Amino acid sequence: MAKSGYTRPRPIAEDTAPSAILFVANCGPAVGLTHDDVVAAFGAFGEVEGVSAADDSGARVIVRFREPAAAGAAMVALHGRPCGRLAGRVLHIRYSVPAPAPKAPAGVSLPVALSTSELGIPGIHLVEEFVTAAEEQEFLAAVDSRPWKRLAKRRVQHYGYEFLYETRNVDSKQFLGELPSFVSKILDKIVTFPGVKSCTTKLVDQLTVNEYPCGVGLSPHIDTHSAFEEMIFSLSLAGPCIMEFRQYPKGSWRAPSMVSGTDETSIQDPQCIRKAVFLPPRSMLLMSGEGRYAWHHYIPHHKIDDVAGQVIKRSLRRVSFTFRKVRMGLCDCEYGQFCDFQSK
Image (cartoon, rainbow, N blue to C red; front, side, top):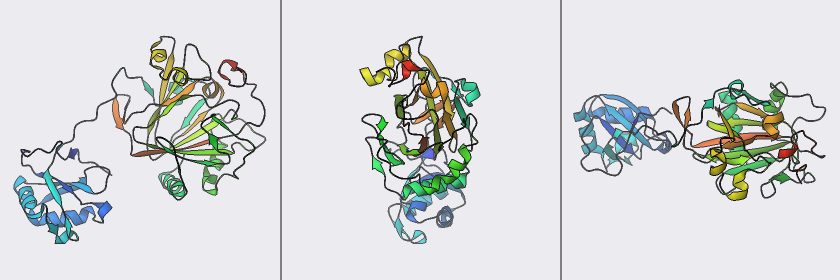
């Protein structure tokens, strides 16, 4: 939903200067009122230039009049009183102020690639608009109709096999059943994905659905070699994010943060290689080869991302579909330094 660039004063300021722009609470699509309804009601006081969402709640709007006097008359008549033209709802109205410009994350900004060719990590491939906007809504509706499992900061669903976060592994003997039918379109398309290698068995048999609230990311990690085969697919839905890839100077399958509780010292080491790529909604990422086996991947815990000089605000939620193939044998990859099995 388009935003107006205006918001309510914070903190409450009695001396907010009168203007032609009002912040109206208890009003909007979430309470059954369309923007056309709002225009009709407020239009009784003067010409309304537009109505837009004040935030993502759906229950607060910005009403922009042509003349400040009309806005003042509407506030006097409607603030704190039931409005018959708007289903009798009691409106809470204040003069609005310009919303502050979002700020990029503090610190040195890591350049963010817009394509995996620009990223330059072998085995990492990205396809934008892998699914359509209509399909995106279908997938979100499908998972939202099913039960979620709540973790500390996000919600998850598992299909095929359950991912065990305590051991970062799966129990290959506990098969949950075939992948759900609502992902059949995705499974049909990934066989032609760039970088996909021929496979004599099912390409994937495990799906983890993650829902990330705004500001929640993912700790640096390498998907456990002994748990999953080489190719890992991740579909981004509902919102964008940055994914960072890291090679630590004393690399192993465990990130330094898993050992010491923080990896700030490690990422400041000049030998630590860091690269990042932008994942827009509806894009599919494939991690394979070196990029899957030898690089830790990480989603920064940001509400704002700096992408090529443009500040991008994360959505209220981002949902990812991560498809993997459970490994039934031993891992004999060529990246033993980063392999949990070979480094035992």
